[in-house]
Amino acid sequence: MSLIDHETLAIDPGASRGIGQAMAIENSSQMLSGSVVVLLARSCRDLEKTKEQILSRNPSLQVDTYSLDLAEPSIDEIKQCLQLSLDKSSKNFELAYIIHNVGSIGDETKKVIVNITSKCGIVPFESFALYSSGKAAREMFFKVLALEEKDVLVLNYSPGPIDTDMTIDVQANSCSPDIQNMFKSLRDENTILTPLQTTKRFLEILGNGNYNSGDHVDYYD
Image (cartoon, rainbow, N blue to C red; front, top):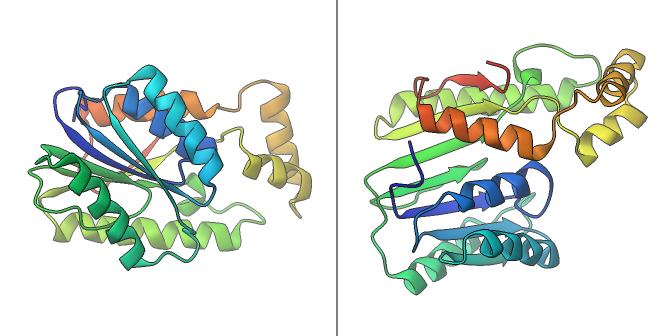
């Protein structure tokens, strides 16, 4: 599934920082001229920074930013944002994809949904009960979606241990000494992944297509 060969509508929730930002920037750099990128997150200021980086690498794109609280998303608000971007573009896209959240994109010929999952959703780790339960439940939702929607390509991508604010917080505050030491070792040995590393791997996986719709694919696979 190449982004280079198609005019694409890309919807990137959580694109203001961390892996969401890195994925939005790296994915957009490969898109065909005239494609549209919709960035969603709470911080308007950070979204504008993401937009600037995208356009510095691929100035032929339409990049729209919308400040939304994705912790309590309003379907009507999201639809309104997408409609504004679609009206501005007036294109019939050959490919549409959304990362992390699911939504109706319209009548495009190809649809891709990427769920950012985690190894925590399939392997138990101390102190991650709530996080792991949420990841496991959401991954199963997308696996069922892949069975029900044959015209949608679904990828559950597990990005590996990444150097983000979340893992910094876990290393400092987890109730499990083993988990704290695990992340400390990853940082001390410089083996923790950067958002850019996992994004490039994600694009390789998406591009080669060596997976079935609904599969869980890890960075290290």
